[in-house]
Image 1 (cartoon, rainbow over the protein chains, first blue to last red):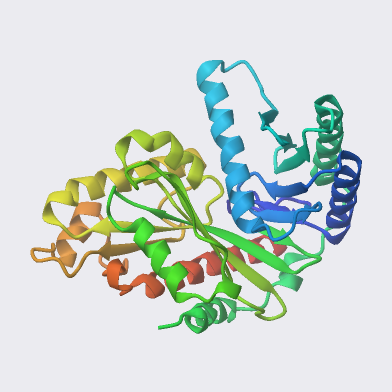
Image 2: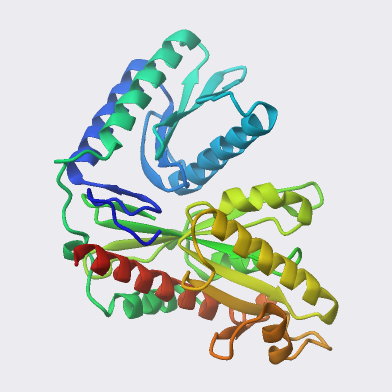
Length: 173
Length: 200
């Protein structure tokens, strides 16, 4: 942490420009439609929720994003312990009614797809791989990709006090 | 940290760290219980059969609109038991701030110190120094008879005299909001500093 990349990304996290967000949404919508998924969720590798699509409603996206990122992180560590030379980019879970896929989408993102078992697994896997590649490309820092100045978005020096006040306001005794 | 320009969202990650049974999960339960449904997520707990934290607890707070922005705070705990070191390191990944929850019982002071060192080591592995990183120290269980004096705890952790220590009785909610507020303010100050440095 502590440095800002030349394209607006903070080293510790992910910064999405409006253009990037729009492009990611388009990939997500296409993936949900083609896979007939009940749920497609996009999060950062550190568990921040980005977006969610699909027919399944009333899902707590923030909580789900934290679990999906944790699942991928744990699996990555399992791989490292078992065979450090191997790289697994996808986790598959098969249930009686649904298939669940968690996939890396570049170094910053993770993708969850929950689809019916009626949809062929090979088809879903192919769609997820394609979507993950496109998402990785969209979020890859590249020269010439403009990012609004962060200072223009973030309020001034009183912001910390306002955040503290907001916490006090949320608190019900 | 995650910043979405289009939605004007800034999401930061705060991790509650500390020795086993020190009160990290209790902090999150209190926050969950004191914040209305519409301003927080569900409390997620990955627990063992013995009701101990296995991987982490998670809670997200939505702080409303501030200066046209929608800040969010994602709160995690780590599992305190020694054997879960790998899990603690994973949870700490991407953290923007830490609340270190220490235990006031005299017999837990060595555990406090080991956990503090464990945290510093993991932060260092991600390229952060404990000094300069937004860390709030909370000393919990202040209501217990025989609770160690603040200065004793300060010496145990090697904290200088200026570092604030938030006294808490997390079971009653005392000190929980104050600790959360303090860490969030520090996280935001650091964020502003980074932004200013990058703009210079």
